[in-house]
Image 1 (spheres, chains in turn orange, red):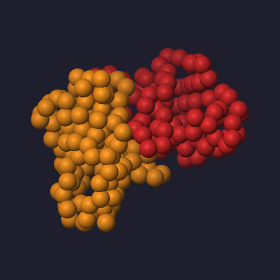
Image 2 (cartoon, one colour):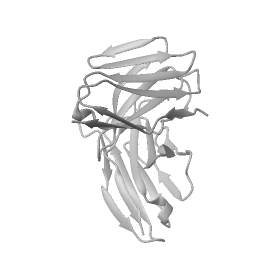
Image 3 (cartoon, each protein chain N blue to C red):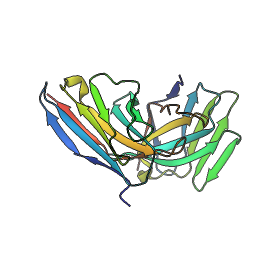
Length: 111
Length: 113
C-alpha cells in the first residue's frame, strides 16, 4: 500500500514554463486536494476534488489548473510559471469528512 | 470561514514538556486534529479529539479542548529530539457536504538536547 505518491519530488522551472504535478492514491479515497506550503503561511488549499470528474477552487487557485480524470489521480498544472509559485506542493486524499493522508511533497523553484 | 491561529515557534529542552496551543473560530467543529510534519516530509495525523471531550491522553500526548474559548492544546511529555517537527492544528467541520478543513500556520517545535 503506497498511500499517496507525488511526482516529481523536485523541479526547477524558468518563468513562463509549464509543468504538471502528478498525485496518485491507492486508498480508494473520494476526496483529493492540492495544497501549497510557504514559510509562515501554513497550508493553503489550491484546488480540490470530491470525486472523479469533479474539481473546485480553493483559497489560492489563480495560476493553477487541475484535472481528475481517474479516481486515483489528481493532476496540478501550471501553465505559465511565476516566481510567486515557488513553494512546496502537497497532495492529500481522504474519505469524506475524515483524516487527510498527505504525499511527501514536491519542491518547486521558479527562477 | 474558519480562522485557526498558532504561534510559529516553540523551543524546549529534551526531557521537558512541550505545550502547543491553537485557537479557532468555528464552534461547529466536530473533530479537532493534530498533524505532525517531520523535516522534508508531508503531514501525518498525530492525534485527535472529538468535540464532546475535554481531554484525551495517548501515551506521551495529552490533548485539551476548551470549547467555550475555542482553544485546543497539545502537550508532549518528556519531549525527545525526535519530536522536533512542525505541528498543525486542524479543526474539521461537521459531516454533510464538502467543507474545507482549515490548517493553522503550524508551530515549529525545536528540541534542544
